[in-house]
Image (cartoon, rainbow, N blue to C red; front, top):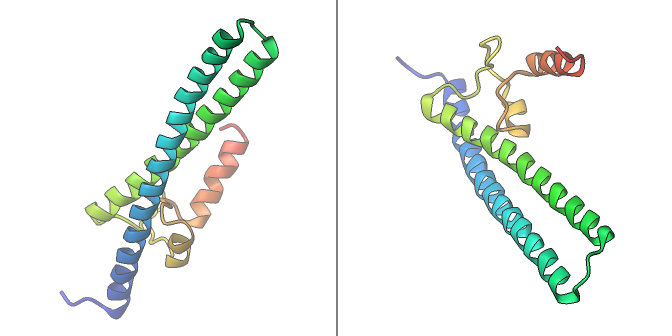
Length: 136
């Protein structure tokens, strides 16, 4: 079976998108590692400060808790992004990348360039977001 010029161009673009996804995966993993270390360090810093100063300060405790929760939330967000990147890379490996998971149509290259981890076409993504905002 002979490939069309469009299919060849799409495959070339997919190779470029794979490189972007691999770079993003590395960046996100490094960021997650940094945040994990910050959580560990903040916990140690707080307990060391309490021991060093020999006094308990509820304000310090509240601030430390807030910082810890904020860092954990950031890490969870990065983990979600990492999951999406891994999923896109898996789809590239399986040959199903660029196909909308809802309707089965090809996702336009412009969308994939903007969001290489996209699993839905614009229309189906909009439908999903409307359902989510309505709590369905």
